[in-house]
Length: 436
Ligand code: ZN
Image (cartoon, rainbow, N blue to C red; front, side, top):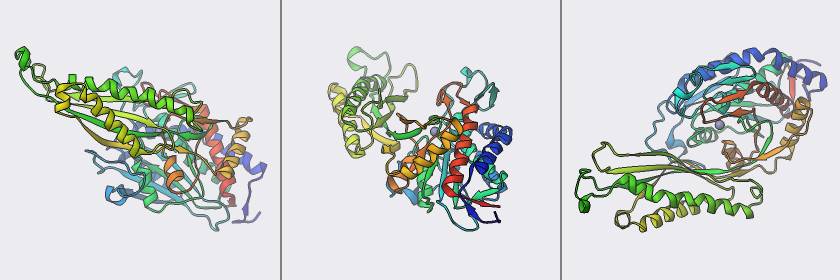
């Protein structure tokens, strides 16, 4: 084979590629730990994005690093509202590989670099941003969700190169912000003009093909109270905003059972045990123990089924809040306000992706010696942007993670190694390879 000659990888090439994943795996684990050490909470993503940009540049990729600008994306479908959040440190990084001659299908690897808060850091066995190895597990906030998968995309590329090949089509490695709250980081990649024949998102939903994901809406319910001294006489106690907010909550929570009942008619979620969760994620209010609280806010995350119209769901939420308020004379006279402050995501079903699915299934079979299974998840991912707004299959397949968003989050490194091999084989098969 001569240099630059494009080929479909044969068995020998595939073996060389998976062997290279094994050879580089210690370095891959060390790099993932480095990523976890950067606490890329919202507003603090820039440090780890510098690390990603360096890692991409070192691999000879051309690096595009830009700050997400709400003005660029606010009119695009899929945009989620940004409320009291700063994008000052919201840098996206994309590394691009260009082959000598394009012979295969192009690919986007996409992963989010942002992580969620640590719940109670004191309750972790070891500090959340000090990645700890214990047997096959790596512990740390973001280790599973989803720095291990994102690191894996770069090491999948390394494996091809170490075997003496490069992808025979353009490949974009996207390290994005904002997945956990809006998805606006990936949306900004669409706006920037990145396109490919397939997108691959190694979220830690396990080494299975994700067939469908739910959508999400975040909203806040603002309740105003009537502040007075807490010792005021019985008839003048005012209105306690926190108690009034708690009065509204059961009505909102009831949506969970009602919306789950609708799954019976859903073509994909019919057999899912409990796709919809209505989560009261934050509650705030009050300022002084002896004051009647003047304000309270409930922050809620709801899931929606693919195909649900978000405008209809918003109307249902607002109706529900007002109906709950009607049952209280004070709230009826002082109606709460609903505000949307993050996720405004439609659900997504992977369709018309037979070619990409077949390539993934073949790579998975080579690594696991078993058929690829599929799952329908009650999570949401950025894959929806590619599928819904770019007519590009958005595959989700990744390592095994326990306690994502919880205490002692951990990722199974055996699964990381295997998934990296599958991704490397996918990269080789989907894009074709050229001899370096
Ligand atoms: Zn994730």
